[in-house]
Image (cartoon, rainbow, N blue to C red; front, side):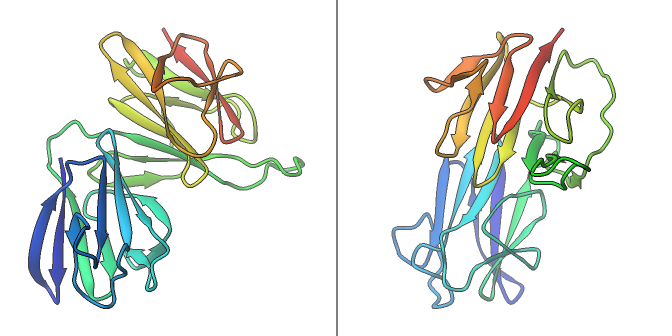
Amino acid sequence: MGKLVVSLDGVVIKEVQIIKDKTTLGRRPYNDIVIDNLAVSGEHAVLQMVGQDVFIEDLNSTNGTYINGKAVKKQLLAHNDTVEIGKYKIKYLVEEGGDYEKTMIMRQGAQAPGAAGASAPAFSQTSGLGANSGFGTLGANSNPASIKVLNGAAAGREVALTKVVTTVGKPGVQVASITKRPGGYVIAHVEGAHRPAINGAPLTGDSVHLKNGDVIELAGTQMQFIQS
């Protein structure tokens, strides 16, 4: 389980366990995490939990939200990230030894040579004990399921589903989660105005079971679910 450690000038003033799907942060007293300081907007940011992954989103605050010194609109938090709001520092920590989710984020990448308007998704995987970004090589392993990109400049790349929950998509545009359950894998809509499509049909209901060979279309990228 993740938690937030709020400090000011190096002095810890509160610790908050993240147990809700959405945790709000701001100056107003109705927020889940209240920071009574004029540098903090009334409704400054929200933390959304997807599986055991936690995203933070700035709610158009006056002074902005920073992670490790960089201004962000919405971002997946990794273990030991420091969120900065005004003079306050909020460190995100996860318990070591837990089976934390490996997350795959597909974000806008460079254009493929000679393919005008085509963009390659980049893969960034976070295990909760650090982050590795880029196109890292993922070889075959004992895990029975994976996702293979079918179109665009990254066509042919395959990512193994090695954790309980994998989120895939482009934050702020369209995001879905793939969860490993005893009866197989299910996909669910997380974020975005449009739901992901499975074999050409938009996802209906909260989630749907995936079958070997199913084609997922998400944020303009087609991926095939492969399970041996």
